[in-house]
Amino acid sequence: MIYVLKSAGYDESNKFIELIKIGFTDNWEKRFASYLLHNPTIVPLFLIEGGTMDDEYCLHKYFQKYQYKSYGNEWFQYSESIIKFFSEFSSIEEMREIILIPRQKDSHGLKISIIKQIASIMEDSISLDYQIILNRLVQEQFIDMSQIFYYIRNNYSDIADTIIDKIIFWYQAKKKIDKNDQKSSSILEGLFLDFMIQFKNAPDFYQKMKVLCEEDLSDLCLKEIVLESIPNPFKKYYITLGPETCKRLGSSDRVKRAYEDHLLMSEGNGEDSLEKEIYEEFVVGEKSLSSEVKRRIGEVYKKVGLKKTPKAVDIGNWFETKRARFRIEGKEKEGFELLAKKTN
Image (cartoon, rainbow, N blue to C red):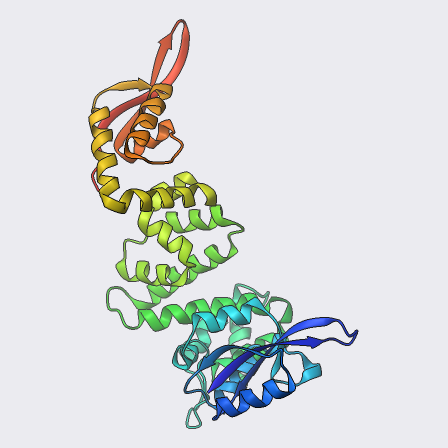
């Protein structure tokens, strides 16, 4: 079994710090009782059945950047990256799929196709020619992915996390894509990797949602992989509201409110009731001032019990529209012409 513990500790200046321990045991109850006897601050975070000492070794190498050397190789500075890793990959099989552990004693090394792809990924991050990178990787004769990560951290420490993230994104895609025959694996791998790099580098919620909403996810395999790989809030907003609405709303607060309103209206067929009232209030072909559209939508919201601030642009949820202009008392004002009902 692989276990992950959280503990209080002290640094060289005797200041309080939080630490994580990653270890292996074949008798968890006995090991935990021993820890607790000497350290009452210890708290179990994750227990992963089926792990081995090889798994422990490779996980230590994988998180080497965070090792707290004063306490030994099994202790690490508390990091959300470590917590996120174990939260996402709850079984040792899933972890092995990502970092290829444990090492296979009868293996002659990683396939050259994998090495070539990693060289290509590294070329995007460091100022070296692809062939030079490839030659260096081949000469190292890596047996598993954890050795590659160790090599990257030792030789390219400043950008190691970026390179390793890209490799993991690519490898996640590869494992899922290999199970599908809908499109060439190499094409899907490239599309997924490009998307995840853009998504990860987007600085805020709006930009991340924009990357997601503008991605062509018409390929069902790519769509499934992308939605499985992004944080859950983006996934549920995208699926529930659709890419056009999410992109139009923009900010996280507005998207969240729209999502909550949708859930509220979905209870007891409230959404059907709202749509029915809207189509009774508005008809195709009519032209109205924006202020009038906003007022009438507000009345419908009140009628169906929806606690939402009305906006004129909300009409676009139910009708295809185009801008209309009106001249009233010599002043030009804007509104909407309703062209057709939207179909789901």
